[in-house]
Amino acid sequence: MEPIILASSSPRRQDILKMLNIPFQVISPNIDEDYSQTKTPFKVAEQFAKAKIQAVLRMMPPKQVIPWVLSADTVIIMNNKIYGKPVDNEQAFDFISKFQGKTHSVITSMALYNGSKRITISKTAMAKVTFAPMSDKEIDWYVSTGEWHGASGGYRIQGVASCFIEKIEGTSSCVTGLPIFELYDMLKEQGYSILE
Amino acid sequence: MEPIILASSSPRRQDILKMLNIPFQVISPNIDEDYSQTKTPFKVAEQFAKAKIQAVLRMMPPKQVIPWVLSADTVIIMNNKIYGKPVDNEQAFDFISKFQGKTHSVITSMALYNGSKRITISKTAMAKVTFAPMSDKEIDWYVSTGEWHGASGGYRIQGVASCFIEKIEGTSSCVTGLPIFELYDMLKEQGYSILE
Image 1 (cartoon, chains in turn blue, cyan):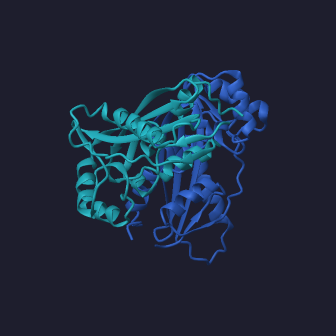
Image 2 (image 1 turned 90 degrees about the vertical axis):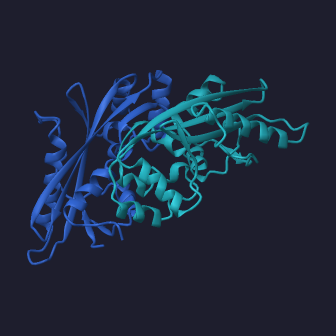
Image 3 (image 1 turned 45 degrees about the vertical axis):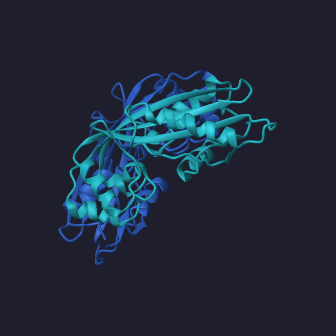
């Protein structure tokens, strides 16, 4: 398999590529992840995923051959509002207080640059996540674990947050930040096979 | 937190208890997991989970204090037929051929012995898993990875099988074999708190 440049510093995304035995190298895109000005919450993940590809392509030396670049962006949406990464304990508590007892949407968009065709394509996955009702004591405890650091919406489905997640509709890799089914499909469409 | 006896040798179940920081010790129950004679497929996981608790209790010295014993059993059901662990490559191929392009149910029942009350309670979680259509080449490749060994239905949702899983409805820990939300709930009901 050809090596892929992963335009993301997320260890969870790296774990997924490792699990799939896809060889990769990480180049972190330098973009400003500010969702606050967006007017189209359901499009913003795709816009950011494409912007991350562009940022990495701009960083590459002009004559270097670039085979594949993969990026992803995950946002959480509830009542048309985007939830990014909480900045402190208080905001993490606030996010989880809003999610508890309700269902929200997680959208992960991926973009893929195919160097042989010099095109960038994208694919989006959505999942619905339902939190059980939680007491303030439970939210406090969850925030105190520190698991929310660096996580969109302030929780990690693959962590202890799953004690409070009743149900998902979609895939957990979408919620984790790299939807495996859609990734496999997108790579297959571009002629990149992981069946080796 | 008090230590729990885990009546299961599944490394995936052990990983989940570790992630939750629940101290445990493994004692494998010696029971015959033969689902072929069952007439109530939706009840069989609960019956086997309870049988595993009984098998472990019988193995303990009469005067030993036993605080908590936890067991779980996972079965896959499609069209009222139970799919257990495939015995060879051919059967793994057969199972995945049947699942591809369709939705099946995964049922995981847990049983918990509460030593201070000398009672055994149980709780069941269900998830629906939808496989994408797969070519024979894809099924062959999946079987050749060997990931099906020891897995109910012959696939692991936390592994490369996720390339072909379009969607789940439920939780992935139910499919993995130890549903975290229901586990947390069952322990809480019995006065065992993991919020420490």
